[in-house]
Image (cartoon, rainbow, N blue to C red; front, side, top):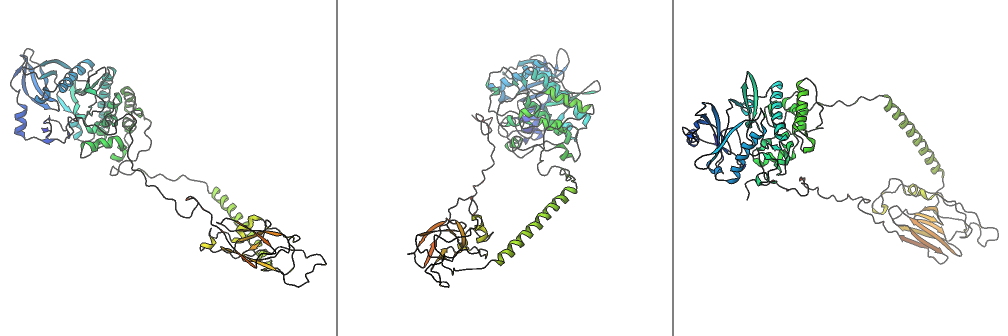
Length: 547
């Protein structure tokens, strides 16, 4: 016998947590168990039912073996606990259990025969006596063979389909509430305990959204979150039972009530194949029933029954669950996936094309290098030039990268090393005869320098070299000069006869955004991974015992 140290509820089954307040149960001493359960033994209730012994005890009441005095027939009688008998909500749920069970009228649901109250006002109801064992006791002996698993599941699903047809959702389906009995040498299933069932049309606060009902190991995600439930909640619970019958263990376990609920809400279920180390035919059925979203599960028990029959007849059910990564520690890892085989011809063709492009690139590079070596290197002009008559051989503006060196740093003045390269000076035509400057006379020049150095010098839009560079002084008029350097703002200069012998121009660096700069873009801290509930839904699980 186990009991809840908080509310005092007693349980004769293998439950771990109290269904009233979620506290972990403790074990009663044998003497105390006998004392607590013997209060009605030996008495005759309502002049009809003689109490023989205690059969079991749950969160709401005690079940006794009784004999009908007049008929001599043995039956089971369930009486509310003393504490529960004084609570109106508990009494209402107790009455609801009797009404729900009798209203369904299905051979796989326990039959309720009578209902009444004792002299002290405690409610009771009488039901058929079920001799056999609970599904919990059967699972304790190990995983159940496939044929028996399907037979048990089909009867449970059939019983719940009948309940759902009458608008009744069990909400506490678990192996403790499934009894296996013998009838005519065949094993039959009886579903018990509709004490927290949601009855369609009930307007009382017994089924209020936001309250938690059920046993944590078998609760659906929406039930664990305190949201409204429907028939698909029972589908999820049956999926847990199928998993347990197939593997001998529940899909989610934990040390605390809330820890188990969190796993139901947020962790993917493990595959039975990974637990067993071998393929299980019911795996697609189980995983679909255990889908987190109700709309991804079976829409009804009839749909689940149809797939169970397919497996029973040797067929296969399509796996609609998608890839699921089992939690660590469950079974063997999934089989390795072999890489797809590819033809050897495609890589060979690619390598051939790549080699041809490489050879072509090397040839073009050698040609350009030899041509550049033959170009004369000039740092000053020794022929007289008139600003208005000099004919400059233009170089494409796109050649700036070649002049400054491909692959150099964006800021040569900031430590980058530009590639040494020279540009052929502009080809100039001599002044016509009669010019007053004699042949061989040194040309008056202006030295152009820059910060950073090696800026490209353009005269009237044509590249003529890099700084430092001597440019002929115009004898009359003005000469437009432009300086360009990678990573800097270009600068325009105007030269005239009155310009000094040397000009040093500073180029302003280009201001860049974080995305364009060399510095790494600041990374915002990743948000904490917290599930977000839908609007209008409570963001936390509500304590069922909170005021």
